[in-house]
Length: 269
Image (cartoon, rainbow, N blue to C red):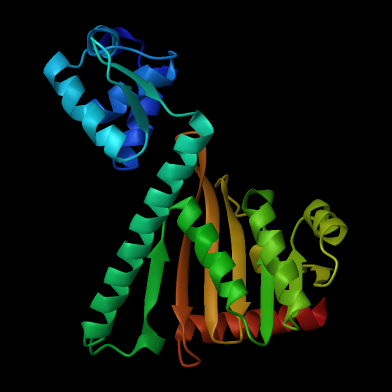
C-alpha cells in the first residue's frame, strides 16, 4: 500500500506531482498504480495503493474521461494506463490550459482595477525567492528596447537562461553591456557571450562585505535607464539565498542612484 511506502518514494512523489497538476488524491493513486503494471482490477489497485474499491471505480471513470486510462469490459473489469509519454502530453496540455485561463482572469482583474493612487515611479518592491528573481531578470532583459546594463557580483546568479536572454537582446539590437566583479566570472561571460560587451567591473561598492559577513552583491540590472533590479546573495541555514529590490520609472530614486553608479563604473572600466 502507498501509505506503507517510505516518505519521498517515487510512488509518493508521483502522486504528489499529479495532485499539483489537478488530479484528486484517489485519481492520482489509481493512475500511479496502473502505470506500474500492464493492467489491473479494482481489487488489485485497492490493495496496491489503499484506495477503497468503490472509490477506485469512481476515480477510474474520471481518468477514463480525461483519456488517461483505458477500460476492458470483462468480468471483473480491468483497467490500464495509457503510455507514460502520451499521459505526460495530456497533463501538459491540461496544465497549460489552466495557466492560460489563470492569466486571462488575472489580466481581466487588472483591467478592472483602478491602478491605485500611488505614483508608480516612486515604488520599490522586494523579491525574496530565487526563481522569482531569475524570472523577473529575464523578463526585464527580454522587454528591453534600448539598453541593458548588468553587473554580476557572484557566480550564484549566472544561469543559462540569463545568458540566453542577454544574447537574444543583443541580437535584436539592444545595447547590452555586462560586467562582473570576480575576474573568473568576467572570463566566463566573455567565453559564453558573443554579442554583448563584457567588462571587468571596478566598482569598489560591489566587493564582498567585510566584518565576516557572508553576503555578496548578486546582480545589478538597469534596463532602458528606467527599470532596475538589485540583489544580494547570502548564506542562511547553509543555503545560498538571493534577495532583491526592484523599481521602475525615470523619477524613481532607486533607478536614479543605480543609473549614476553604473554609468560612472562603466566609463571608468
